[in-house]
Length: 136
Image 1 (cartoon, rainbow, N blue to C red):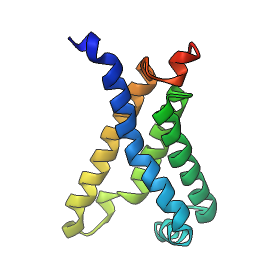
Image 2: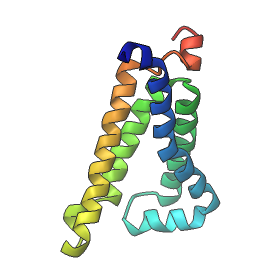
Image 3: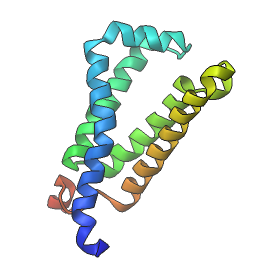
């Protein structure tokens, strides 16, 4: 049964992963000054450059997942991006106790997303992708 569902499930999985990154990247574009301010607030180095990289990863990587183009590399890049962002923006160990639960849930959610991205990198995008069409 799962062999029959492999192609549509791979496609749906890519779309759902992209649904996390694309809207976030677009929001960073439309609210660029706020994004830079937020990045500054967590003491991440080079906040303007970091915001530009975040947009590149989220929009570019999200589109790569949607179309299944360069999928394995995009998934690897997004997994590293998500892992790094998790330590800066969801540091549950560094927040007051009353905020730790939600922050920890967001951190763990991101770790699970990294797991999904690594699985996508390992197994590829499936048959409904430009990678498959191009023989990659």
